[in-house]
Length: 215
Image (cartoon, rainbow, N blue to C red; front, side, top):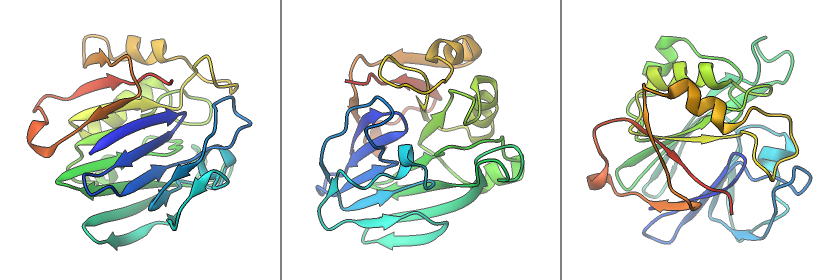
């Protein structure tokens, strides 16, 4: 599969079959550029416009925006209900964490996770190969909380998201703060591009962070 970071918390996953899955599409009011994307599946963690804008999604796609179990051919999806804040959803509502399994690889997109779930919940997520992790704080978990989530899940690859970049106009913590927090604990590599390919047989045993570049 090919994974493309579209900016903020949005990713496009292109399977070897040609099927396209889009996570958390945003609108054009947050600084990131929008452009039409043809998709087969769209997963939206919650109904804020920086995570649920369908104006630029084209094609005969299926929208999944609720917790539950879903099967689309060889694609398995499980949505877990979580909170967008530390007050049981009273401030910002609910957030759905999506685990998608395809081509022998499991992807976990945390959306706007606003609190560190308990260890029992993190263990219930099972094996996670690639974790899409918010690290920018304010609206989500911050760098130190993100580290705690990483430790609890033990994914193979961690991709930070929802942090301050030159493009975004939201008040978020920078990526540097996250990298300082994980320094000496997790290795990280800077790709210098917004895409990479992953195959089940090529995944390494040691957890590592991959920094993708918004272009």
